[in-house]
Amino acid sequence: MEKVIEHCDVVVIGGGAAGMTAGIYCGRARLKTQIIEKALVGGQTAHANEIKNYPGFPEGSTGMSLMELFHKQAKMFGVKFRLTDVRAINLEGEDKVVETFCNEFHCKVVIIASGGKPRLTGALNEEKYLYGKGISFCATCDAAANTGKTVMVIGSGDAAIEEGIFLTKFASKVIVSVLHDEGVMDCNEIAKSEALQNDKMEFLWNTTAAEFKGDDHLHAVALKNSKTGEIVDVPVDTCFVFIGYLPNTELFRDMVDMTCDGYVLTNERMETKIPGVFCAGDVRDKFLRQVATAVSDGAIAGYAAERYIAESEMFKNQIMGEAPRLVYLYNATSKDDRELLSILEKYEQSHCDLLFIKADVYKSNGIAQRLNVGETPCVTYIKGNQIVGCVSCGDICPTALDDLLKR
Image (cartoon, rainbow, N blue to C red; front, side, top):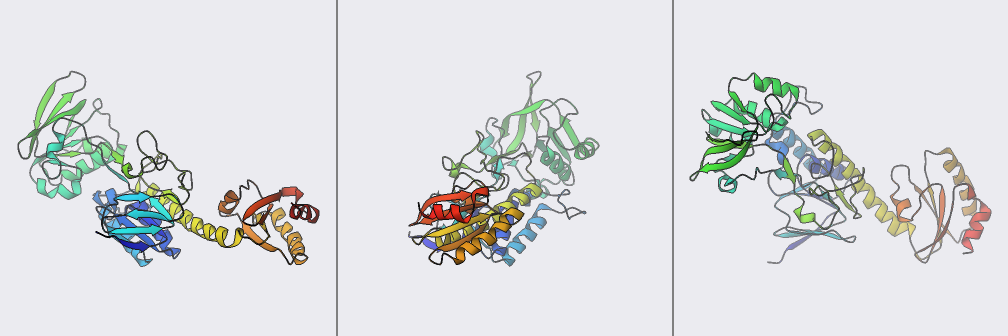
């Protein structure tokens, strides 16, 4: 089947909090932006039953409600959404290509915001009970179906305990398997206190999943005591696994730099090692993975993408060229840099045969990086699409510029 080719400025891979925030910033900058999400718009956040620590929502919000607001705002700025998975990608060169089953998107910038997928326990027979057969990763999705039943939660982080508390509104009993010693959890203290006081919650300390048992549907989880080695079958109707996530980065392996765990490495501008490729959200190597930090990443990536495209066009259409030209790189916040502008303007008046281009690096030094300029102020001489030389800092004066033009 021949794929439909579409051209846009930015393709965002992933429609979670980070991806949609990046889309909002790109769309507001009037860039033609396409978000590709393979599952649910909102990503993992959409599955959260309750979010109480996102600023601006003192009463809290469900993950789905919050993500619906993100979705609505992105669409207001003209961002397009495509619910499909990415099959192939080419990140090299100026024209980057993102392929889905039916489409081939050509773009100037790719923002990786593919998030993560739930981490599995690795216990025996786990794969037999995935996908609606007894193992779940979403309390919001499956709580009602477990009304009056006994369920198990594996994990003790914020998600595990908070979702476990939510499950007590439906299930008759919530058994929590915790890896640590009695009383030790990985969640915040408020959730821990509330869980320990909940009569419907039972804690099995120092335990890990050894095997999942049943026929066509899960009937029990065999838990192993990490101290005694004893294995006990615990009858349950559903087991909810909340032991973290793995980054969705298989598609980008050997393209961008990653940690040994598969998280993408970026700088503070969300830039990867490939020009025009940015990364944001939980898929990035970072200290904290929350909706608030995903939004921060997405905002930076979206702004950086807009600057990258603007600088690319300026570099191609103004900075480089056959005709001789002087490029003055300066920081508009620097008094010394601004004062040199008057000297260059006088020099420009006496050299009508030259093009004079001013590039302010205050908000972004992308042009300076492309010209291999490390500090400002700097005047670079370009002729025949080649960088001939430069004069920087205190050396900038009419005589130095005359010498530069003789090269």
